[in-house]
Amino acid sequence: MHEPAIARLRAQDPDIAGLVEAEARRQFEKLRLIASENYVSPAVLEATGSVLTNKYSEGYAGRRYYEGQQNIDPIELLAVDRAKQVFGVEHANVQSYSGSPANLAVYLAFLEPGDTVMGMSLPMGGHLTHGWSVSATGRWFRPVRYGVREDTGRIDMDQVRDLARAERPKLIWCGGTAVPRTIDFPAFAEIAREVGAVLAADIAHIAGLIAGGAHPSPVGCADVITTTTHKTLRGPRGAMIMSTAEHAKAVDKAVFPGLQGGPHNHTTAAIAVALGEAARPEFAEYARRVVANAKALAAALAERGFDLVSGGTDNHLILIDLTGKGVPGKPAAQALDRAGIELNYNTVPFDPRTPFDPSGLRLGTAAITTRGLTEEAMPQIAAWIDEVVQATAKEDEAVLARVAGEVRELMAGYPMPGWAPAP
Ligand SMILES: Cc1ncc(COP(=O)(O)O)c(C=O)c1O
Image 1 (cartoon, rainbow, N blue to C red):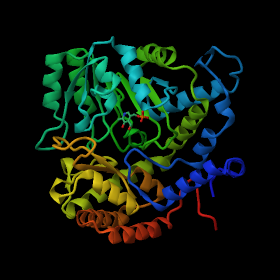
Image 2 (image 1 turned 90 degrees about the horizontal axis):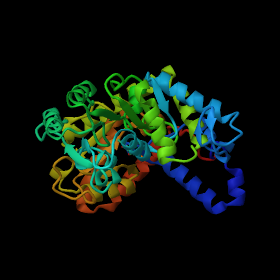
Image 3 (image 1 turned 90 degrees about the vertical axis):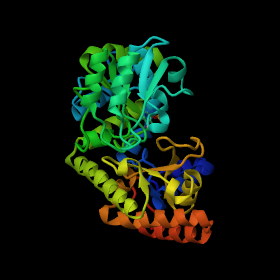
Image 4 (image 1 turned 135 degrees about the horizontal axis):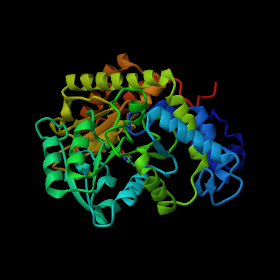
């Protein structure tokens, strides 16, 4: 039973409705440990599925290129105000279609083609859009890349400083896609100021933790902050760019008309709803529990001999180096999926294997915490992961089928926002 209901979809297009229901059941039955995913509330789903999708609104509130914005302007202003309030920023743009276009807008706002950008290398935990070679950001700009220390698995701030001094980047990115430790925003700010670079903090993964007070905020350190809205922040697929008042005009101009046409108003409304939820005290409790679950899961995995990059986690994310287990990341992730445990294979720092067949696994606790799982469940999850990784090495499919059944049984006890099995 989908909530909001999809009865008309079922009547008109059973093919699509059937697949939506099947996906909902899959999300209900599985242990979803993909670090970038979550479950949004039915209110966010309703806003996303609303008639706001019918409306074109190029421009910004009070300065649109189409008529009929009587309701869209207040919706966008509410989203902007809530973003400013939740994150304590001077300016917020809520129109970027997703995280990658938001990051591209930062380049357009501050750089010219060929300028130097410094970001964390992709295999070290950075994102494609921080100047990786296959991304437009690595092709149209001159990327220089920092990484983590081999002995600690933590960002090498000495390397960041030395590289910044030598290469004089115009833009420095901090934040990433596989970074299990707290980002030292003040240290990045000091380096950026020394070399005269714009500091951009990409908080896509940790935005919900920052909103809930479970991770330090980059506000006051970074000139510009980008985030997706759909990971720990628990909103719809979308993004925001936040900045000091000084950069407001450059950011807005880069998003529209620099990169985009009409904003997705249904998404803007859903972002506003999610930000309303993030402003509540329960969300701070949620953020605290996400981190507590990740720490408990990391400890249980370490106890079972898993090699964790940096030795553990400060946030929602855990990166496992499977080298010592004798199984590469990809077959392990595929076997875990068959066993009802969904995560992704990932490179680990200094990975000798390729990104398409790497040594690691990445997992996170944002989604399972939304389902209501607590620290007590984490040793069992670590035990299942251990069993399945061992079974992968032995190609023992029976173990995977048994674990899938046990996972299904566990998850049946935790309600899922947006869907419930028929009574
Ligand atoms: C740190 C970071 N930045 C940007 C993005 C890009 O977001 P999107 O997939 O919405 O383009 C991601 C996505 O995973 C991310 O992890």
